[in-house]
Length: 241
Length: 139
Image 1 (cartoon, chains in turn brown, orange):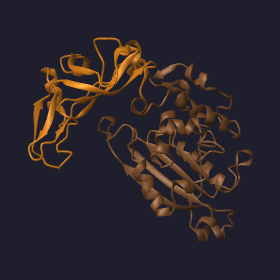
Image 2 (cartoon, one colour):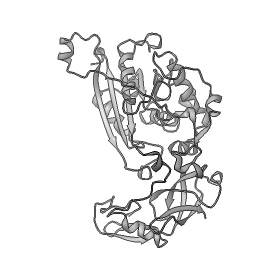
Image 3 (spheres, helix red, strand yellow):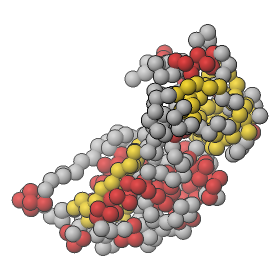
């Protein structure tokens, strides 16, 4: 219903939604361990069977088993452990906006505006500074709304932003370069940990052929409970401190 | 985990202290909204406090039943076996005339008819002696 209202208010199209799935599938094809690696087209998404309008099967994230982990410690301890290229948490922000979807202040603008504002402020960096992002992607429309709310493009232009190639390599903010929940895996609670894992790996320069060249600053955004809980984290290399 | 036997049954409302009056109202054919005597706020979500000012002087008044569709989704794949027979059906977010937004489903027509900003009217659908659901038809 959020994506549907976004289409009504801003002219976002089913093809633009589908483009998110196509791009992320292309990303997953270069990620070892990704669950879905067969290339897909916009037509494949539109013909994959309606689940609930406007979402087709391939607009929806996967059902997976899996887990992810990272080590969180102090700079000093990381040094003692001899960690190579440790990645720093530069900022974080949260926003909790409603209990039920019928209490959501707006169906098309989320608490990601507030959570990212806090995170950018703490980090001392803004959306234009980010080199790579992990954006919660339970459905394709979620990604479009999040790219807007995180400040990567103006409200209402997320569909065009994606269709113009700005969420992939060579665009403004390569996002979900591992394939995300739509193509890499969605194993429930660890879902966003995969986004952390990927952005951290990108910043450490360990992504091989899917590496975003020279990535120094990254953002991870998680949400849950029907857009109610939003959390943004800004990560950076030692150069960004 | 839900048992496969239970999955065949639709979940039904379980009234609590906050919502018992609301569900009783539906059994009598009215949708009760909470009106705050302190600040004038009107709310659909049943609770002991006003969501706007925190006041506790809330009184129930029947809604007109008129509203507009703010958004909707037509479900083609059931969330569980209990809903398969209903497919396709439209889930609605309705802006009530009195202000609050509520969630419901479309009745009395094909889901394909539903459009944004469509005028709708409350239908109290009796499921049992205890449970009546608020649904909406085209006005």
